[in-house]
Structure formats: C-alpha cells, structure tokens
View 1 (cartoon, rainbow, N blue to C red):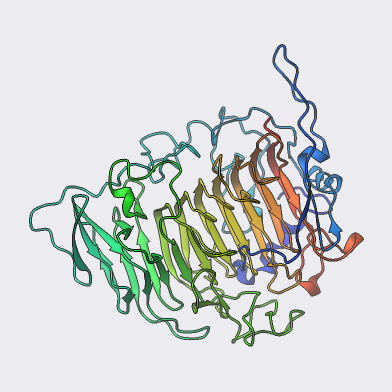
View 2: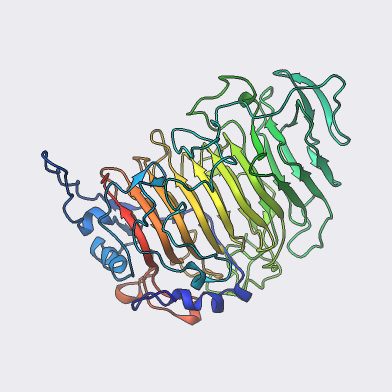
Length: 545
C-alpha cells in the first residue's frame, strides 16, 4: 500500500469513487477568467569549476502560482503539498538522457501503482521506461527531435512501409480506386461508412480519406449499437487527401466502432499524403489533417443547453453518477456531432499499435482538432500502444467519459500533451509527453487537467497517472503539469523534466478561499471530491537542471 500523508488517502478510495473501478472523465477547454501567472524566479547560476551541484530548489522555482477569479494557490503551498508525499525527489538533476534514465537504477524509490486500482500493473521503476535498455516503446513508435526511442524505430518523417505494388493489385470492396499517388495505389474511403468495412493490408496500397469521413451515424445518448465497425489490419497506412482543401478527419459516431489493431512490428499509421514521398514532411510539419475522433455514450459533466442534468450546474450539468439520459455535449471542432450518455462501460472500439501523424487544425479560436480526440468514450474502449506525433494542437484531448490509456506517447505537440476535462474519470499508465522545443502555443503543458471552468460540475474530473515521463521543452509554458478546476488527481512513479525558467507544477483554484479553495480543499463526499492532489515517487528535474 502506498504510504500517504494527510493528503494521500486518495489511492485507497479510488475504487469506491469509480463505479465498479471503472473510469469516468475529462479534456481541455479552460476557465473563463484570464490567468495571471507569477513567473518563477530564475535558476541560480551554478559554479563554474568542478562538477556543479545545484542548490536545493526553492518553492518559487519549483511551482508556479496562478491567480484565477481572485484565488491563488501559492508556490509555497504547492511545494509543501508535493513534499508531503512519499519518495518524491524535488531536486533532481542530470537524471535523463532524452526520455531514458541514464542508468537502470530507479531515479527515486518507486511505489506500487496497483494500489490505485486494478487497471494498473506492478512496476518497480519510476517514469514510463525502466532504464536505457528498456525496449517497450521501440518499433511501434517513430523517432523525431522530440523523442528518440532507439532500436529499430524509424523516423517519423520516413515514408511508411506501404510495400511494392504488384501488377493487378485492386482496391478492396467498399473503397474506390483513386489511381496512383507517389507510386502507390490509392483506395479511397467513402465519406459515410454506413455498413461495416474492413481494410486489409495489400502491398503497395494505402487508404485515402477526404473531408469529414464518418463511421456510422449518431445513435444518440441512449441508442442501441449501430453494428457498424471500421476494421483495419496490421501495417495498413491511411493518408489524408492533400489534393483538395477540405478539412480531412475520421470520426467514429456514438454507437459505432473502430477496430484498428496493429502489431509492434506492423503498426497502423494514420498520416498525411505528404508523408508518402521522400522529404515530403519535416521534423516541424504539423496541421495537415484533422485527426481521429471517437465519440461515445459515457457520461460527461458538461451538457449542451437544454440537455442538462441536476446538480450545481443546473441545466448545464450532470450528477455524480452521470445518470442524465439527456445530457450530451458537442465535440470540439466538428459542428453538429455530440458525445455523452449514461453507459460508463461504452465501447467505441480498439486502437492498438497505432501512429497518428501531422494532425491538428484550428477551426476557430479555441475550437481545434488534435491528434486523437475522445468524447464520452467508455471503459469498454481499448487504447494502448498509440503515438500521437506533431499535432498542431493537443496530442490527445479527452472530454468526459471513462476510457483508460496504457502505453501512450505524445511527441511534438504544439499545445498540451495529455489534455483532460469535462468529467473524465480514468487511469493512465506508461505514458510519455515530449513537447516540441520551439514554436509551441502559449500554455502548452505536458498535461493540462481541469473542469472547463466549472469547479463543481459532476461527475468530477478524476484521474490517476502512473509511470509517466513528461519532458517539457516548450518554452511557452511555465510548468509541465497544470491541474486546476477542482479536479481530483494522483501521480505515482513519475519523471518530470522542465527547461530553464520553467517550474514543474502549476496548481490552480478558481473558487473558494482558505481551506475551501477548489483543487486543494479537503475531501467532501457531497461534492464527489476526494481531496487535494497527491504525488508519490515522482522525480522532478526542474529549471533545466
């Protein structure tokens, strides 16, 4: 059992708060008030002779204080909260070589993540990888300047392995022959997939999609499964059509599924058509298509006007159990497409051994498409061994629902790596966010966790991260972890690295005062609040140390 201080009882109660140890909830819009950020003090200049030993980090260097709606959690308070945890090292320095620890000795004493819930597996190390010899992220990922996974992993800029086109190779039933593109046969998907479709691996063939490609039709918050599944074989490459100007994306509606199951040696790759030619993309390429969107019938805390539930949010909120049969919300970036329902175990399909490259389109300010978007997807949805690379917005954004993630990599995102809110309630283990070093948008955090500016909407955003590695190189963000809006979180077995001038954490409350400030207030069962965030066995290497 993890050893917790007064704030660290969360793990033992996680299963009680999640229905059946399932998951519930979040992604990332943000609060309505303008944040006022107190910039951390600069890192002290190290000695110029011998092997420098950084001075102990100060609270002002470690944590960033943000005033929202007149409420502030000071840097000293944030620092004290982390120091109250078990086995944390706030003075880490020179512990990493890229995403890997410099040796096989744990950077700090690990804890047992299985105490957080039965989704988690034992891990006797901190971070997503155990040491320089760990191969668990090799092969199925791609390499870039953001992160190099080593081994036989190829570059993200390389043309995917489509194979050599054989004479007479034809497009499978349900697709349309679009001719040759870059020497490969282009088989175009229908924009409306209304019956189940299978995409086999055929040497020299890739699958082209154009505009808003949808799987199934929306069955609503309570409708029965449509029976429509898009099945994709290992090694298949799908590419957005760059020959016309429409916003290309793939969307799986409520009640339908995607079954994209690759292998470590033959991952499924969603990319842009530019990636099919040598030197067609570069390490800075992004924003060439809209990404992959899965919509489900699990609860959301935010309801569209006129569809709401029955808690403090009045007609705009749900209840703690997510039992409103009418509550639904529009998904960001796609007008007229909704998510939400009452089925916490809803199944939108499976993504395994998948890469999603060069995504992210801004439809309007604050209304963007990212690498992978989950809206109200349930715990029956399986997502593991997935990489989101060079999204022009977030690597993954999760709006409500109860889907869990394992072995998920975000490299080169222009905004946040893992962005969760709207009442997401779930678990993640073995996750990596390696931000792009330049050009990122303002406030691009390795993870941003909140509640859409509504501090007590229910279900409350609730998550557990275990074995995570966050490499925060984007200079526009003041810290790697932003947690706000009253969200309930625990962090176990993590590694957090930030650049010079960057703190490691930014805890924000937007309501309350003194001991009642949201995000750090004591547990309150009436508000589905389990108390302040907890940190145990986390190695922090802040301020470019």
